[in-house]
Length: 480
Image: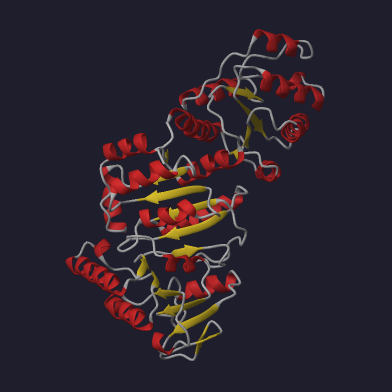
């Protein structure tokens, strides 16, 4: 469908009506959306609809949508599926066109009755020119509009939007991203997508000034050709990161029972990613890691990684992990090695790549000099610092602090040098060490430096991040 400008109001609604609000406040019911609005300190007007209650959640109830004193910018529908048609007819009569259908029980049930009801809903929506998100979905999280289906979330507006068919993954994403110091412009959980599909939301986000990066979780798509054309057009301007569910036979069966979608064959999606320029990820964790790199690091097409900090076997494993991810761990130049040997003792160290030099570094200034030399080496494109936290081993902790202080100096004083990211591990998984790891992670994230939980995640994210810019450099611009 062509984008309807009336739907823009959904992201900052002045008024919201809730059909199906319950005086019993059943857990998991539509009342959670009222609670979410309260938690977010929503500034608009809320109209619970219930003809058997005077008030719900501290808000005056109305017996019907017709009795509400204005046309709501958004109607949240949480009635039973058997009453869904009636609810949409009430919206048409009121002149309310923006609908979030929380109601479930349609084609995802696998029953013929549910599929027939779905078709009737589409017909009603077309007749009333209704903009329906859903059904069977959690709807909208908008920091600017202060609306959330998942309770209290940050009101800070960030550059990342998320389009998802899964409410559960929407919940996970909206809680993981702030933990990594990243924030969202909008999240749209659209479930079955009977009326508005992912391409409709992409059309909006393409020109949304708040959105610089687009993440998507897809199960099925109504118009694959349109999606391909849109992502090809959008991805050079705004990176598009996609997690596709249902690429295996077991996953496809799960998709059918979740949103009633046809998942599509894995080979077709492989072709889609090859042609579209979208970044393919295999988990929400990987999606967050890739977004960290895209948001925080400057454009980079090179895949030569300089690894520093891992001792002994850890360095070897880190090199293997990066190589398996598609990155290179090149030998640094003889000139760089020679310069490092001038202030680092040879015994017990390696000034090759990866670099095992920790026990011979005597000052933060020496660490900083190592980072500078790595950054100047023509074979190195990215620096990956591997930090293992051992807070009870004071020698190791002091060494780590020297290294971390130097990393901050490098980042703050030398923005023209090469991209830097950090893997901070708690190898022994001790509680005290985990507190230290989390504190260090927060410190570096506040500085804008990507931090990964392990080298495997760092390697995968860096491969995807550099791959995006490589494709961009190799792809001729689209004719205007």
